[in-house]
Amino acid sequence: MTDRYAVIGNPIAHSQSPRLHAEFARQCHQDISYEAIHAPRDGFADAVAAFRTAGGKGMNVTVPFKLEALDLADTLSERARMAGAVNTLKFDEHGTYGDNTDGVGLVADIRDRLGVDIDGRRVLLLGAGGAARGVILPLLDAGAAALVIANRTPERAVELIAPFGVRAGLHAGGFGMLAKHDFDIVINATSASLSDQSLPLPPDVFADGSLAYDMVYGKGTTRFLADARAHGAAMLSDGLGMLVAQAAESFRLWRGVRPDTVPVMALLQAG
Ligand code: NAP
Image (cartoon, rainbow, N blue to C red; front, side):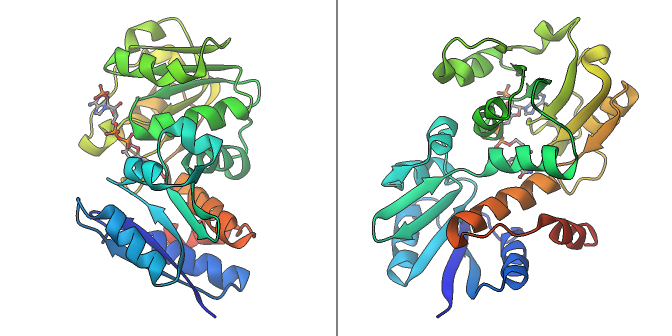
């Protein structure tokens, strides 16, 4: 019997998730269907309940419902709890399980697709919104020697690391604290690229051989990536691989098999 999955959000028409999961299912010979559900802003819980009652096995959750999904889940993975957000729901006889695969998707993309080791490296994370929050634990788990979080509003960055307690190498503040420091991996988790704005980064923040990674995708070479290249970053990447890898991790949670992301990436890049 075909198992039903869906992505739920508002808006949702732009979502690549149905295409990604259809490709994963074909590749892994899984009999699933995957649809996009547009829920009213005040109708998330009802829409999830209706999908589950109709036999749904799991859902991806996107803007603006990731926090509501956290509250709705009966049990949570540690990474969802630490991220304070859920992007994947799994329904079974035990109830509703909430997970967050964004961070592990980012780590997989940097390590496996780009071939950049995180273990022992100095990582700079820019931004303190939902995207930044979701990747802190996975980056620490991947062995980052230092993880510095810088945000336009410094207090938000400081709040983000509070749940982790005092931890060697973990620091947060404003962009001003970056002077005279350089990093092996610089990740842009701000939305500045969406409005083509530069971040006030010191030019020498990119260490020799460093990777500049913009979580934004579908915008070509963003202002952040162009600035990074001008300031000496050796490798540039947008966030398309993170999108594909987080979807692959959701698929693994539901189906017990992790799809190969390489051919699916190639398909998306081809348009
Ligand atoms: P969010 O919660 O709205 O946070 C936005 C962040 O960007 C805040 O830290 C904000 O700083 C900062 N910011 C916005 N404009 C800025 C500017 N002009 N200069 C400096 N900082 C600025 O957004 P989010 O959910 O974290 O998403 C952030 C980005 O990640 C989005 O572009 C999203 O598309 C992308 N993303 C990609 C993936 C993927 O799979 N590739 C997954 C998740 C998110 P303040 O705190 O000072 O306002």
